[in-house]
Image (cartoon, rainbow, N blue to C red; front, side, top):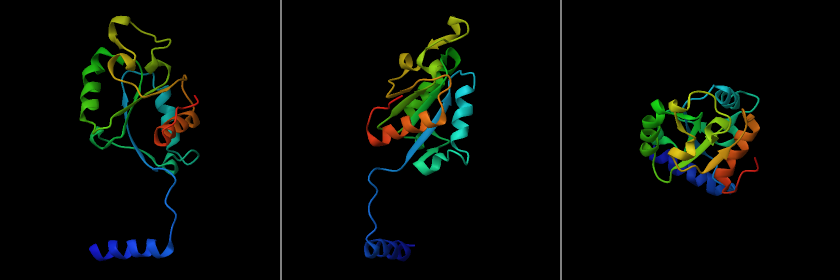
Length: 155
């Protein structure tokens, strides 16, 4: 294995391949905190062949321990409040949180107010807000890439 890695480094040096202009990956852990599943449908479309979220360097991971970003959909319900905090604290530093959709932002939520812990920003510090009901896969990808680029999203 060591020999293969050494040969690969030598080959890259000899070919003089350009370095990427930015980091090209972002590991996302999605948590549904109480949504209607509209945002989840759009998120699933991103992994299909038309949008292909992998080409952007975005991947969904199964554990918050492997995640760079905690992507939360839906208004946080009282039953998901503790589970959301556990997922957040399991993430390595630096932790990023993205609120996806109007429900996660606390806009026009339906249901009994005593069942809600509130929008995501009331529970966790939110780094990225992606409005829409639901936002399109293009909007989601652009907002997630803004985290990689270090710029504010234009959504």
